[in-house]
Length: 346
Image 1 (spheres, helix red, strand yellow):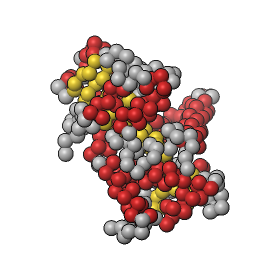
Image 2: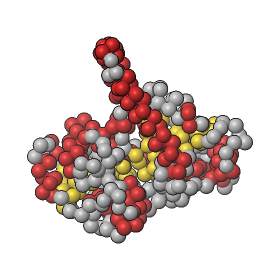
Image 3: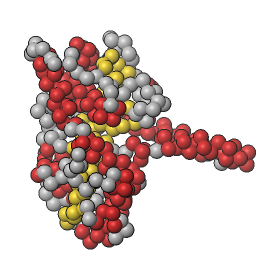
Image 4: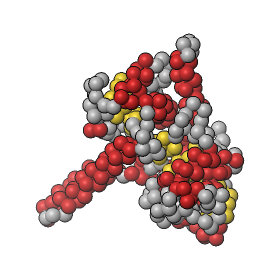
């Protein structure tokens, strides 16, 4: 299958054009079928392309010198959706000029522009931001929502579960274990909306997921669950806590290994293990949050991502396109709707 080209917001992120183009070039070295629409200042993009000849014949440049600021209010950025590199990259998906868009820019602005241009899928009330995180096991865990919706009712949570499960099946290739994030695993714990969502998912048939109640935050990265579902407020707090703890442990180890000569010798002896830990915790190896529930694929790269991180985000976008993510979500929504109406599911 030929991968549709991917629109790259070349101006987004902390370092902008250089890293975004370098990331696209790295992605194409890994997958030589990738093609790109590079959106941004043409002069700067051309200069960056001089270092990456593998992109020249497979990329088109869409000139734009207006950029969404990192601290810009989404409603303000939305007014310039037709003139900014971010807005034009998303609009390319809407118009069919690209299969997916990747940006490392302002998350709130990207969500606002994506939702306005692409709209939510039939059967989905709100899109959700989903990201992949490492676990102690071989497989990663998907968590959503991570900030697109500060509040979510039972209906939203059920839809998030369906979208997250479809995403997880693409990554894992099997039926995922889905849980709702809660303050305990007992059925009586949590808000009414959590208990209502759990009841509906528990009773649902025809959904390609294994749902069995709740998971607590200390189990997110243990490898015991494949999809963790929550509202954007709780999800964002949990994500930041996990990221902060990972940095804390890394900094603590660095300080311990440099505290004395004996510690430095110990570091040299244990270096293979610490390098493995560093690789496992490196956010660039899991970069690329996805806006699920839209009529199109939009991937958010971390603003501080390296070229390798951008390449990973590009690969995520391509994988979701090739696996027809929206069709998978639609099929599960139809199965849920059929059950609700009392019709037999296939």
